[in-house]
Length: 100
Image (cartoon, rainbow, N blue to C red):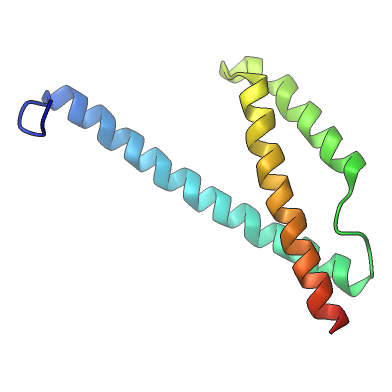
């Protein structure tokens, strides 16, 4: 199927998906901006970059809420585990910069 044969309705739905994808990116950027603030505070106060108890609590909460949105808890867990791992890497970088 090339772009000339794609039905108009399909194009419209895809355009809406593209909009949502951009919104997801914007929200992810906002989340990382906030976690950057957390990382700065942790670095200033010499706190550990990772808070395993907080992460596990957050993952459990997100998985539990998946049913109300019709989402797969395993998928959501994997996504947020990856996001949290990136946050920890960022916090470690901030800590190293603070120590330098």
